Image 1: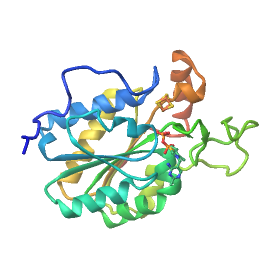
Image 2: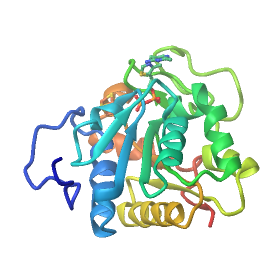
Image 3: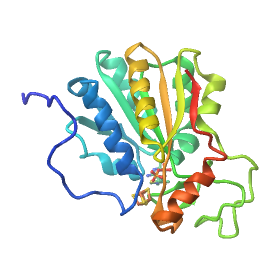
Image 4: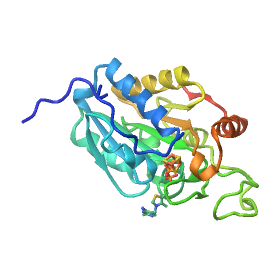
Length: 237
Ligand SMILES: Cc1ncc(C[n+]2csc(CCOP(=O)(O)OP(=O)(O)O)c2C)c(N)n1
Ligand code: SF4
């Protein structure tokens, strides 16, 4: 059997799978740095959902598993139960986590399953072309709400919602690619919390310039505006 790699980040660069200007690369690079700095790569398994996050399937030197849309949380829970020594990290988009996958996500938080889940919130279904998501804001123009979202006054606030059901030992936070050091600290805390035997979730606000139809400056400004609703910070320490 091949020895497992001590580090997950590959020093050799390869072409990005993501659109130019996408936020996913920032998140994945930061997560990789955290895994390597914590020296947990040999025991880490990385799980990807359906959505643009699945383009990370060959990003790390890690065993990587993939599942159906919204099923990354139960996939991680099942893997962790079979391999208690593993560090199990799953990633999904806001569509996968808060629509089709909401029930299993909330119950993992409720059961305090010792996994680390990362939710990338770009307020739309990105991979399929920019449709309305539970996180879209009232009035937000998307491919399926050309005149602006008019249903549901409030967007789903994932970490706040999870707090309603989660164990008090769970770590729940919202970071942003606009503050990388803070996001990095949250990812480290989320892995430490799993190692302590508890559920951990970090939502990360990110931009999707392709579906938002924004240039670099507009992407940053749009994200800054979104963060007035999606408040960055630790929700449950
Ligand atoms: C069960 C199921 N329903 C629908 C789809 C189609 N589908 C593929 S990606 C996607 C949306 C992904 O959006 P999100 O989860 O927010 O991730 P993002 O692409 O924004 O990272 C959908 C609906 C699917 N693959 N499987
Ligand atoms: S569609 Fe959006 S989220 Fe997906 S890779 Fe392109 S910019 Fe990134």
